[in-house]
Image (cartoon, rainbow, N blue to C red):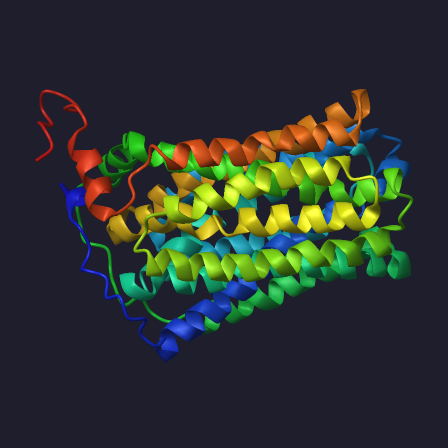
Length: 424
């Protein structure tokens, strides 16, 4: 069966990136960067939007969560589209669509309309992650894959630096609505660049039966859902913090939104460095994510609680930076074994399954933290987030550590049906 074919052995030495790979990494970095700026822009101006529409913290959190509902629902369909129509084409579709809905955010005249627009925005961005991952897999060798993916995904952390620094300044100068027009225009520029310059695939997917059969094969991989659970725990921390830290600093610490953006740059820069390091460690360990995740998440969980309980602003920033850095080390190792083990024709849906776990966290964590903060305090809400790293740590102990054990877990599945037979 196609998903039981192991890829070529991974060389321990790190090859230099070829020009097509460097171009691919640069373009996907830009696409992910604007993806994250567009989605984080609303968190940087939530207090302003809350005041304009007269909504509380729970409803503000809903604006973030409704994005993730649509985003999560479109993960697997996005993988199916990438496998069916091609990763490059679907990447361009996503860029164009979410840029349009970013601009539409500026036109919302009520809270209800804003919810609808942010939901559509989430659906447009939801088809992008699996297409981006498939595009990279088709243009890289297994030996360089996680390092290249680490470079691409470091854009998320850098966007988390840029958005809190730039968006509040733009919003103060031209208003929050015009700020969304500016970010939408940037997305259209990236769309044009990806459409024109994305290199052709180097590793084309093999035919392996009907598309629906391939999707069923992937969705029935129970082991893959454990990796999705690990990403759920990781993303509970990252999205819970990125959504509410500006409001927390503003409401509880008396810090202006502009200053909050500067303070958030510290952990975000740490996350960028940690994501790059995590990608290199994943390549060096040839998967074996437990070597990174267990010690890193064992640090992240208590650091998060110390951040919440710190009596000083400086202490909170230091502890928060440690928590984010440690958690970000785990991002690429979570993906390492699936991306090294799945064949190209199943990477689209396979990566979508893993990413879905993170988006379910993004769907639930912002709203939950908002509700807890409204009912009790931000301190209690942030301590609850520590459950996320602990979940990731626990699941890392019961997931395959390399390609051989991943494929062995697939072979141990029971037969799918009498007509389909037993996996070899």
